[in-house]
Structure formats: structure tokens, C-alpha cells
Image 1: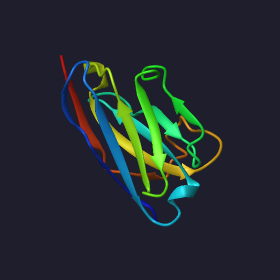
Image 2: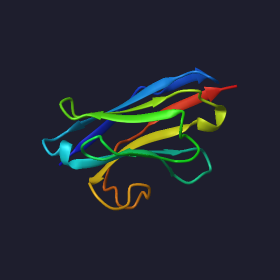
Image 3: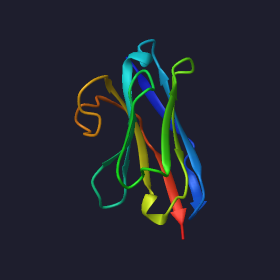
Length: 124
């Protein structure tokens, strides 16, 4: 069973950057597609970014495209989310999630393994 632990969240001023990490346990990590989602207070969880098992294909929501970069290091069982040009609208709890590679990368339902989340707060 794969377990996911996020880190790297915190408080940053608008225009700043943060890099989130998601460390996975379990030998099957390289075979999973990994996604990042976020949930702001009073809002539904939304897709942010995803990366296929090989790292060769990535997917982004329109709201973060060009500002965020998702990557993975299968040797370290870790996926990253580099977040630049942050705005207060990016404030949320960020979750990483894993699913079997293939098909829908943007919906939350296919992801069956979730971390507990890390808080990102962007001040204006």
C-alpha cells in the first residue's frame, strides 16, 4: 500500500514561490500517475496538476498553467509542485494523490490514494 506525505507548504507573499513535495512509500510508486489538488475554504477540491508515471507527460489546470510545474523523481519516490508567481487565490490546502496510470488525470475520482495535505497561504 502506497502512503503519501506532503511537505513544503507555508506562508508566502504574493508574487513569491514555494515548492511542495510529496513523498511516497511503497515499491509500486513508479507505476502510479501522481496528481496535485487543492481545496480552499468553502470551495470544492479542484485539480491543479498531474504527471504520468514516466514524468514525460504533465497536465495543468488553466488557472496555474505557466506558473506551476509538476515533476517527479522515481528514484526518490517523490513528486514535486513548483509554484511561482503565487497570488492570494492560490491559498488552499494542497493534496497529492496517486492512481493507476492511464485515462482521466484531471478528475479526483480516479485517484484512490491521498495524502493529508499541506497548507499554502499567500498574503497580499
